[in-house]
Length: 453
Image (cartoon, rainbow, N blue to C red):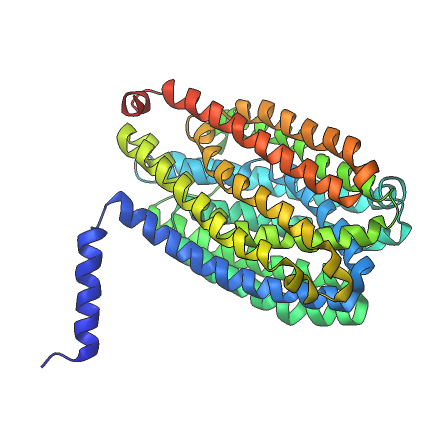
């Protein structure tokens, strides 16, 4: 006699086999999106809890200092990453089945370049801490935390590069688990360290959490490489040096242009009255924007390996269908998250402390930006899949110019709100340019062009 639980399991399997058949595009998208969603909800929930406690421990101005540290880390991380994560994802997804030897050489080259890059940027973050804190932010007390932030740069970028490799292997369940562990470590370490040491403690705690993520991602990358027959080592990796010019060089130049733009905008905010407290409110708004975008970003992580694999198989019809499916899914999920967050903004900010509540409009503005960013994040994958990375460089020049120019124009008049509006304007322009680039890329690609018309 079949139990009730057994009947339910059988019914679920029947539905899955009917609507998500094995080997189908829908099943691949649903499986990757599900595990990315699990990782997003679990890890970001824990990170959100951590940031709320940090804000209450540090106060609004103290949290503004943490926001400046985080923005500076993002700048150096952008320079250190230089598109290495995307390069690993794209080439592993495209080659792991058709040419595992080449995929192994490419991954080895990415890991070697990444090691040098993260070490250089971590040291540069430490060495320039005095200049950044005194000359750029006019806040000498930031010098110490920025020296420690070099550790965050190293572990964060290393973890992200390795996670890009795991995405190429389509190991989304492993990514979800590693993200969960990172969130747990952040709660257990960053909160007590902040209570004891303030902003420097927050930096140390977050660095430890990223170090845990890096070690787990490294272990799983090596395991997945063995599983797929990829050889990791220096032998032969220079044969794939073309990726240095085709992918890493344009990504590095893109980072050189784009990474400093938010920091320059925040330096203008620091020159306004109440700038540090304003950045505290902005940092909360940015964290909620990132929270709304994390699930779409996790789904987007599924898009690049899927599109790259279809590109490698020259399957134009499925490429276009997958692109539209990811655009709809990413934009829809972002919109579903942005609306309630914008409506509940005053209550959300009260969790951080009564002094944050007045900045509810910052969350509302950045929720608009989040929806456009979610669509943009998928569309921009097309240029990566069709080997047009240099286009991204020129598009980012426009994005950076819009953000810095808009901040220069709006911040002196409207303060931190001017920066939020400039950021939203830059995101909308970025999306429109990437849509144009995607249309041109699809029409100019063999196999995809025929499917698109």
